[in-house]
Length: 271
Image (tube, rainbow, N blue to C red):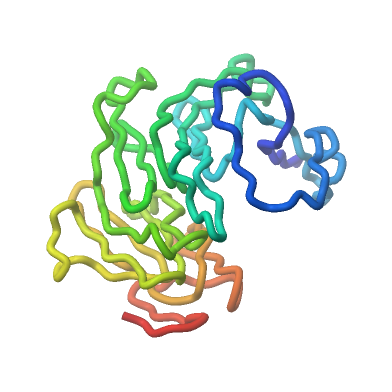
């Protein structure tokens, strides 16, 4: 059985004047590859092949994506992230776009902008008639109840209190629905941590977290930490038994997320 890896790569094309100019704070030491060059340079296991699905500037600065029930790909484009001294460049804006393959040949040929007013956008997820977006210090809900690909109203702040100053590349990220109906996310170790709650929640009743996995229930509106520790969680998924695993990339790479666990940290103390 053949397995297909559909990737978004960088190239030159239409739509360039519709997007902010990508921000680069580092010296370029390696030449950029065209989509064709990038495909040629890849190696995959036997039985797999790689196909180009979208290229820059149809999609730029992609940092996360989610599929809808119509087979369309929603992409979070992050232009504000700069890292190092600049941290996030708030003069720019991030956006959410929708890519569609109208002729079903495996290549996206249609794009529309859903929202271009985001800032510090790191993740998106779909559900409950709208888009959930991690835009520190907030988790936002962008309602589109009639499915016309336009916001029904201004974004609703679901949670606030996520760190925006010291977190940098450890900032809140990774929105994904779990098999239990909760919305899961991740948080890294940099900075003093975050104190999260619904808007208006007193500080004494907020949940303090730093590195680890968290979750939020969309109907009971409960926020809680699943497990503390590691360093910089950047990916998580569930197996066929509903067990949650996540990667860390620093002090051990693959972790089994047990509710209530406190794992080894790169440094610092648990709350």
